[in-house]
Length: 501
Image: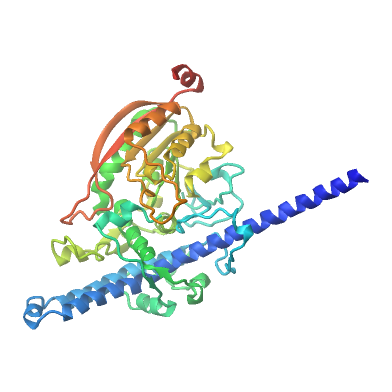
């Protein structure tokens, strides 16, 4: 009898554990839905937040004495021009959101209450993060991304990532780009106000999956699902607009030449004998809006970009999968700062995007974008020894623990695989005041290299490259990095053991 009771207890214990796992999964999904709603709300709040800036400029102008106003008589016209620019940006944003296909049901209840069962839920302080969503691209005729649960190929068997097959964190870099950060306040704009902004905007028409002009409203864009978001969230949207220039505008070519060209030339040289039938595989963590990953694919690599930020993923999916022609869209990326402008025309100038048509760029079959935290997605047994190359551009300083990043890069590379890095060490979590539990390991470049040697790397090339990051090329202020560029090769396990003293 005692053995029967023991078996029953064990069975009930297993059922309790299953119930607890289900509760945790439900809570994690609810948190992710809430985070994604907040990001969408930040995009939707962009017009009203930008309009409030213009109203602030107008209030300041009205405070001037008449004699000073007379000297600046063109200012009311500038304010009108600013509002037109905001409408153009807003139309691009709303079209992007209409094309977005959420991987989760955003209408579900997200009322997550505190309780003892929350202690073990993985919760990330950065609400911009995506748990794990992949979209793979191949040379197929389809030009749209459809998230599904059926394809796990791009993130490894057994991964928690969700993959599909179409065509092919506020960081300090973002916040400090203009040398300041707006105070955090809460704003909310209704869907009705936002749609009116869209209706009054001149420019591109919305296009549905059949190429027809339309302006359908997604159910998850319903105003009742929008959240009050702090202004810092809207600042992330403005950062995305600047990143679009870096990756997808002719105006960003100089910055791409500084950052991406050395990487592409190095890859081309290191894999000069690559085969079209069996192309080498290259991973690009921190892929942002996807241009570097696409360029690597066009070189003849199976290229996968990995990105944690939903802000980035929503935009990159739109540009990669929904662009029909080069120069299809117009944005005004520099309107949100009156500082260091040479002229009003420079500040308000339009920028056409994308500068190329991604689907016609000559990508290699297998090109993909995988959403999720780098550590969670690639610290997986199925990723060990999978990649011929790992390219990190302005990425390694996004780590809570840079040692873990280096360890994982070494683990997922094949023996003899290469790690090409480009970027500074502006650690993103170095100044997280008020969050005592936020780990941030901030190594010097010397220590980074020492850790890399420990994990089996040896240097083949190293130099410093001066570059900017999402900088207005016509601004009077140009923030520059003396970025570290290197090529390291992973030794075989035997060679590493022999080299270890």
